[in-house]
Length: 300
Length: 300
Image (cartoon, rainbow over all chains, first blue to last red; front, side, top):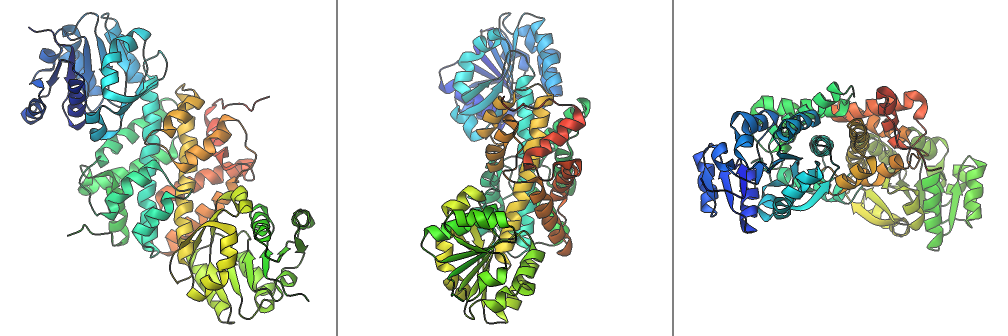
């Protein structure tokens, strides 16, 4: 079989964009996804795609795994035989948001085979993924960084180098997700209060954007509410997962995280009402249904 | 007695700065404070100060009230006789963060005497107050805005004009305080998790500043934690008060505010441990004491 420079396992909205960014920088890339539609999407962008992860990974120097959680990451690496198929001096770039302990354990198993492991959660969304402008929060050995460098350069605008121990990248991503999740829930609660008190939502958006209550999430997400558009830019289910990881990590390290726990419950309530796949600002629809608020309607 | 252009009732850190900003723009200003030290501070800045609010207000066209809550505002306006002492065509500029319903009720009582009332909560801190660069979230009649205009121009960089009904300014301020309070508590919880997971606090600050977890409060407040400096830029007790107002307003308007309620409990726990007068980032010291975390120490 042909030796591949880089394999991208998982061609979802993030993985597809990252594979395209690698392709755009001249790398030889093989993508893998179980879903035919996702493979066709990558082929339409000029890439080569296969159904089996191991086939994509065979002989690869770099394997970028862009799956949803630690269980999928472990399954790809070991049950699907990706690690044993890749080059003996290859590097795994692990993108999912997982617990730091899980990252450490998986890194050890990969390193036991002689390959390197970069704990490298991503941030930035599908548009930045395709543009090669992600933010990557990474930790791992110097060897892992060296082997991953060409791929990181193609995929990221910013690589935060967080030390030589796998787990630090995942820890930083969890800290970010704690804040991001709480801020989205706070934005929804604040907008619900504003509507209840008779304020005009668009004016509230603009005033807060230039006030001490501002956040990256406020600026980025509230327009979805103003436009009444709950098609998922990022789904409620992402935060039931990521705030679940935050509170689990707190529990297993004996650190109370009461604010994250409350925000998690809000995302869970929203998901329980059937809005798990919808945009994460759907939390405001939970408040609206609870309290009979009239939210902005989509433009006709 | 001499007719005063503008009276500033309450020469705390905000009121003093606002009085100085009015003075700097050439207004004739009389300040009032029960505390001699605060009067001396304004006199040292070239102002005139008296102990009794009514004496300061006598004949004033504009009375700016910079006290802590609705009870103090009501006491100043009516029990201390400020409204009856001011010019019959004067305007009250009410700065404290209060419930929208309280603002409406006080406005009605002032307007019943023929004076105007501007519901005008402030944001920005003492440094911006002194520079005349506050943000003011204001609502009231055209008459109230017209009469208040020269004072607003001297005190504020931005005046958000939120309609002709008193209460809207207070509502917007509450929405801002909901977000500000939750974001401070979230910053403290996130930094506690980061330290528990072995991350370096200064690096966490910088990474998050450029990530989706960023907030105005993260950028502004986390340096206090990094420097180990909990002298109050803004106190824990401000947020036990303001998140109390948020949750009370939610309760009385039948809107659940579970995230604000949880953040309020965190500020209350911090105050209960004796840190009510300390900087609002002291919430991180609550987590540290609960979980045995080592926070950054002040520089020697």
